[in-house]
Length: 80
Image (tube, rainbow, N blue to C red; front, top):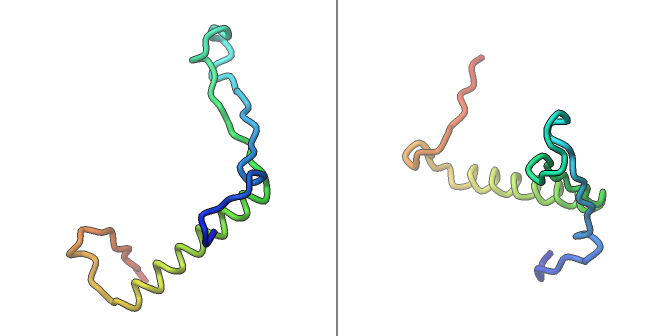
């Protein structure tokens, strides 16, 4: 990931068409929606990248200790 390279095996996926409404016309393309079945390893990698980005953002936010309300961001309120 440091060099922006993702192996082609991680990008392989199977697209499965699912019927939206079984009572509709099944010969029309709009009657279906596509679901992508991706590789398990790519899902784990995606999760790890997401967690890493979240931890990075949280650490950076704590380091800067900036009031985000002035930027219009959502700030969660803890009620005890």
